[in-house]
Image: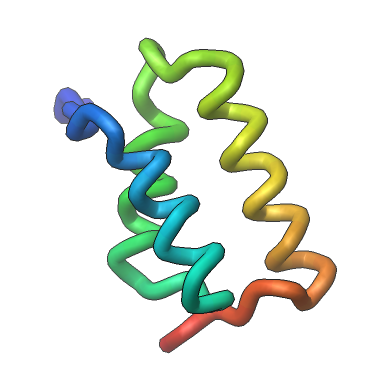
Length: 65
């Protein structure tokens, strides 16, 4: 399996972008997927991703095609 290297601050950037736009782009989704595959992700970053995904499920954040 290929090694996934996440850019520093990428999770915070995605969270901030989604908070402003209330939408999740395809690029954001790929970034989140890479983040979840990163074993060095902190517990706080994992919780942030979980909150973001709950917002999608509840309809607060839209998914762009």
